[in-house]
Image (cartoon, rainbow, N blue to C red; front, side, top):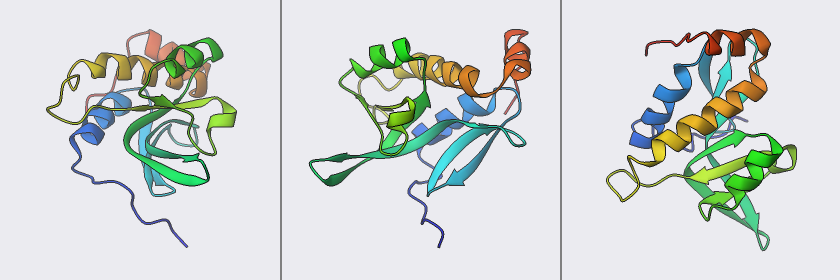
Amino acid sequence: MAHPPMFDDDDPALLRLRTLALALPDAATKVSHGRPAFFAAPRGKVFAYYGGSRRVDGAWVQHPRCVVVLLEPGEREAVLGDPRAFVPAYLGPSGWVGLDLAAPGSPGWEEQWAEVAELVDASYRRTAGPRRVARLDAGERHEG
């Protein structure tokens, strides 16, 4: 049984994340477990998710407007020091971290995107493979 969609395709945060993620070499998107996932096509690994959840005291807490990325251990620990950060269910033990995003129009909305771009870039570099990373380092970007 397929998971129902857990996102709004017109969400401004998702649209902005799509722009960042799909600019990376061979990046594509699919829905995985009801949430948008960004991966290096055609059979590459996921490097970012939009939306996540975690368990707190036995109850599920949803984080519908967040980015979930895979970071190097030192970077991950630094991000987890941010009050917006959390360890996502299922993926957290493998090194993934979630970061809640500011709502459109709220304080921090514009300022957060430079940080999100850095996190997505770092996660892509961990998962995309050396050839794609070399293309990224050479300045290759896709226009969306």
